[in-house]
Image (cartoon, one colour):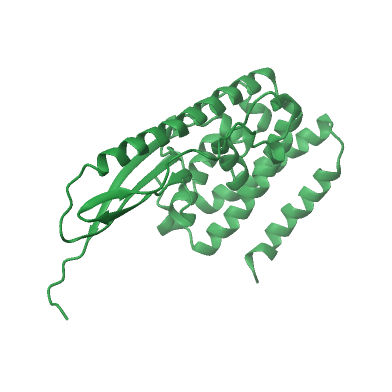
Length: 267
C-alpha cells in the first residue's frame, strides 16, 4: 500500500477536513492544538527525540521518513491555521524582524558572491583546470536545541518546537537535499588562460514586490514586503510561520570550485 494511503494518513486527512470546515472559535483552536500534539506524538514514536543526537539514516527507513514528511505537512497546516487567527502584535514584530534579517542576509550572500567573482577573475589558472564556478548558499543552521528560540506564546500552539524544527532541518538536509533557502551558481569559463565569469550576480527575486502567498497573505502582514527567503521557508518547505518565528541562526557560504582531471593512463 502506498504511504500516502496509509491508515494513519487517512485519519489525519479526515481530521484536517473536519477542522478546515469549522468556523473560527476557541473549540476549533483547542482541536487544532490537540491535532498538532497527536501528530508530533506519532512522529516522535517513529523518529525518537531530536534534541539529543540521533542518526535518522540508520534508525528510520526511507518509507517511514516519507510518512513522517506527510505528517509534518499536516502539522504545518494546523500551526498556520492557528497563527492566522492568533497573530499577536509581538508575533508581527518578530515576523518583521526575521523578514528584514533574511532579506539583509540574502543581500550579504550576493555581495560576498560578487567579491568572490572579482577575486576569481584575478586568479592564475593551471593547464589542467577544466571547470571553474562559484557556489553560494543561504540555509537555516539548526543542529542543536539552542538554535530554536523559546517564545512567550509557545503554549498556545502546543508544539514541541525544538524537536520538530530540528527534525525538519535534518530531513531537508539528509533526505531531500533541499536545505538551501537561496543559492547562486555563477558559471565561469577559462578563456585564453584567464577566468571569466559572465553571469550577472543580482538578486532579481527581491525586486520590491512582496512574496505574500498562502498563509503569508495576512492583513496584519500586509504592510511588509515579504522577502523571497521567507517565502521559500514557509511555502516551499514544511516549516510553518510559527516555526519561522523561532528560527535564530542562518548560514551563508560562498565557495570557489576549481575542477581538474588527472588520469593515470591516456587513451
